[in-house]
Structures are given as structure tokens and as C-alpha cells.
Image (tube, rainbow, N blue to C red; front, side):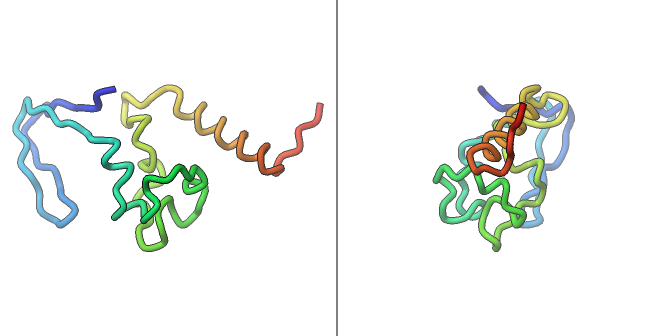
Length: 110
């Protein structure tokens, strides 16, 4: 997957420090998902550890000092906007059901 977008019009991208960067029309913007998803300043010291329960934590996926700005933006691997992966909701549901079954939260009867 090569996550990129092409700027459809001239514009400015906001930076975390309050500044912005001018982006002219036609520029290809690469979105480095692996870098963003393992950024320790956002996700905490264990950013590279496989800990799926971090998305079930009401305080956010990182530590309490770095809560997410948006719960929907936590997992970038599914993309977003009009081109979001059609399997995102199925994947999230499967994760929740597996978590419930593995931890004995749900009792399935037939």
C-alpha cells in the first residue's frame, strides 16, 4: 500500500507547532503510516510493542500524557475519508468479539 494524496489545489498544511506549510497544486504527499503509528511522543514508550488493548483504553492508546485527538484517527492503516477501507468496521468488530471471547466477557449460547 502506498498511502499518498495529490494536492488538488494550492493550500496550507497545519503543523503541530502552529505554523503551516504551503503545498502547491499537483504535489504528491506521502503519508508515512509506519512512522506515525510508532511515534513514541504520541503513543508512549511502548509504541512499538504489540498491545491491541491500547485501543480499548478510554484514556487513549498512548499513555495518559498523550491521549489521541480523535478515536477514529487512532488506526491509520484503514485510511480515511471517502477512500476508507470497506473492511474497517468488520475488522473492528472481529477484534471486539475475539477480545470478548478470549477474556470470557461474552457467553455464547445456542
